[in-house]
Length: 472
Image (cartoon, rainbow, N blue to C red):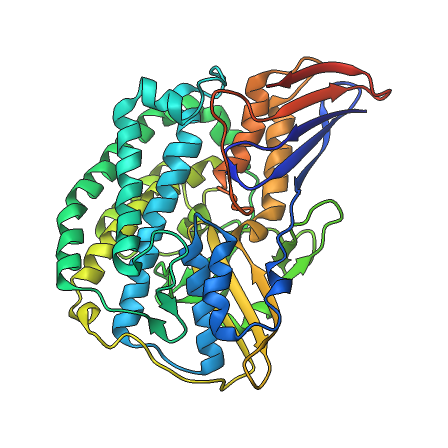
């Protein structure tokens, strides 16, 4: 038996390790995807006042702090038993859509575009965002501008781009001004134009990646995401829906507080990341996926014209449900289009400018659950407090957790197809890492490579003797 180790996996947020075991004939026998870090947020929140939770949990990540703040605030509001004002609800979704734009732009342009535009087998010294800047400066500029657009909306609303304290239990801290609304509306046309150009170049290169589309985690699974009662996409509100691998709705309209009847979590021996599974099926067969592709598969429509047109074209080309994890990138672009459309709709709603943006209350329940669709997938915050509002227990199920089992199976499929024999190809190593990047996992914080391969891959035989190595 021979073992290959990829550590760390590059161009993802956080630290992960992949181990590939080869049989004596050179074919892949087994793979393991391991998350090699632990943060401990669930434990050190114990004893804190519940109303501090949005500020504390937003520190989990510097890329998607808005997602944690919103899910946390919704859990707090379940404890308070309050309904937030309509203006606050609109402003939160506006902030959330801006988060989608900046987060998806980061994933697509900075982390994954080097593979699309420079090639999976291109020189790793230039297969990064700097290589994109040199060879495709217009694309690089579009990525920077689109992410800046999302971040500037966040800053305009919350006064800070990262870890803002604007989202609070009961609503938000301050209303939006007409001047801010008008400025964002004035910048929207260029953001939409960038999204259109990005789709154009991405569709043009798709035919170059038929092998990857066929083998990048294309095994059928279940899918989960939030929808409204008509089955339209919901990012901030909605109820949970599970759809089968052949498109049948398994469960629908599951309220936040009942998630644990359908989702359980397994502890893995070799990873700090737990493995959620669909409870009625059991572990380990109850694999489901969340995130952009899962949402596309779960919903009936996006509910906005341009995004629905793109989904229709996607369905004509790949079918729905589509299973290849490579298509997460495609779905991610559709969601940028959707987020831009929703931003325009929310800014056009007269209720958004209302100055009443916060409801106040104390502890009216000892338990609360908040669920939203983070850019990477369904995010669940579950809190228990005492009578004084001090945190007694916390459970956070993040999108990457939901996808943990699916990522492992995707790594196995890619390794079986691309890794063979005693001679290692750097392009095979990159594809094993690239299928993980397709999910845009958020393990804690960003890891980037500049000018080198941020991995070491070693191939040894059953006696431990080194047969081959690819490293920086």
